[in-house]
Length: 281
Image 1 (cartoon, helix red, strand yellow):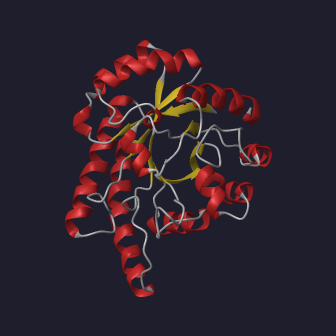
Image 2 (spheres, helix red, strand yellow):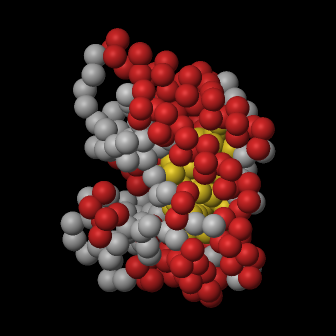
């Protein structure tokens, strides 16, 4: 199990210049970095890989940024734009030696509205078709795609582990895995530990943050049961801190961070990592 940090906590967008964060990440004790790449044109992946190597870090995952124009269940143009973006990320992952593309790859974040059963069924077919294309390419490139259920306020499409597993089965690709997040599970699952066990061998990625999206461990989350569940399924992938603060304005707005949840983002990273290493290992 490796412990990582999502770059959204410190910057948006991530660019070549953002690699200046890497020495601190290493100093704090992280093993891996989760790169939130909003536009593939923002980075030279070869340069980023050299900087990762120089500081003894790895890119454990690339976090997809799915805005309104990127939606695998949207208009034809939105589908095409989204697919082109995701395929480009996989190409960059090869250079970065990164195994996992993660996030709500099936839809634009924030698209949440009641639709009829027939409309949902049609969206489902569209997403399955597009994910088959994406995962076929991921298989060829030796990468995996980890889809993330989001809470009901951020998506009306995939909210739970069970729904995610159903989508994985429908796509039928060994490259498609599940990505669970403690923040979203706290809202949508009856018991987070049960969801982790249900995911089992399909769990490919894990996000850890406080129940209020703050520091892992400084909240009411039942971390003991989560730790036991991860051990029970022998999870050995990355555990990544994905928390947000008001310091990165564009991400604060997107994630509805309207107040200062923690004193500092450095504190989230340092204290969160210390807690997770003790709790999960």
